[in-house]
Length: 411
Ligand code: PLP
Image (cartoon, rainbow, N blue to C red; front, side, top):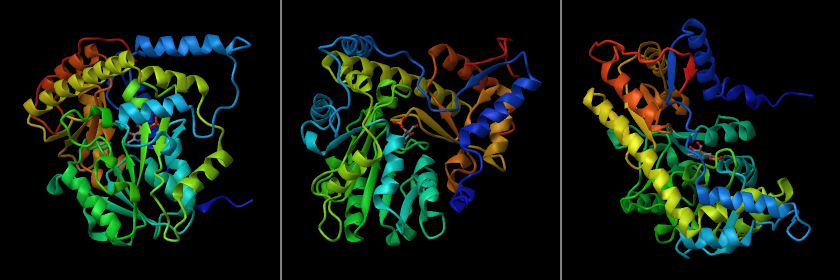
């Protein structure tokens, strides 16, 4: 049996495996230090009481003859789809166009199957690595991936110079890692561009709940977008479901291939072939998250992460670091003066004992940047702020590293 040769084209180590490897090496050399992790974008706060109650009740019901259920509806629990329709889309997307899933990443993978081979995708560079990696495993890199540089110089709005030959544009707003949050005008431009070039847009709204200033949370706030866009949503960063696993995808009935076939009917065929839906328990958790009290609680939790981001941002700015994001996003995107972002990563690790994510892991245009995540307890953020204030990293004016703890653990 021959190996799928495309595996040799994906980055050898998945980004966070390499971060974990360097973390282990650091612990080995510094067994008595306390490491602060602002690296992987994983939520840290416990599930809210309403979600817990929803999950517990649902689990207990499954243990009764009357309450037991097996496989669910093919598009997912109708009550959950209705809540997403009402609470997230204010009724402007009908439940029939909403497909519940086991998470956004899984949907990103399945989408590559939907479109099959010989498809070119244009992707914001830097971006969440799964868009490119899933595409490479299916189709290889050559002639299939078109990176669109997003830099401070273009205000992180994708450089569309090479995008015309793409079949699909991947857009994530707020963007992971840059924190770029598109205005309505920018999204209108992208929708018009996609229409003019007969392209689809895949819009990743995993961080939409972090937008609180009236900018669009959904591509469907842009008139005419139902004819060009699929939207991916996730409960992971919205409600702390990174471990529970729950997401959704919107495939509007208006979205058609050039031969007039609806994308929606193919998507139904694909998901019923490839998986049997999200966990029924997770879906009950989602229903609870979108209840009136659930929504209040998750909004408060997001506010907490945003305050974390704001504290980190302030500290970075006070040090004179060139800092982006962290306003409508749980991530800060920091320009470094090191030759490579891995060098900057190692410097901050050695001098401030802070674990970050090197920008290169998100694409070529991420070189020279570090991503800091605000998913942490307030105690950890305060400590990180102190360390940022005094770190003697090469990038910054020298100062003393102030270590307050001496246990070998990751915060
Ligand atoms: N999309 C983006 C932009 C992300 O940053 C992430 C996770 O970090 C995901 C999707 C994956 O979400 P999920 O946990 O629902 O698979």
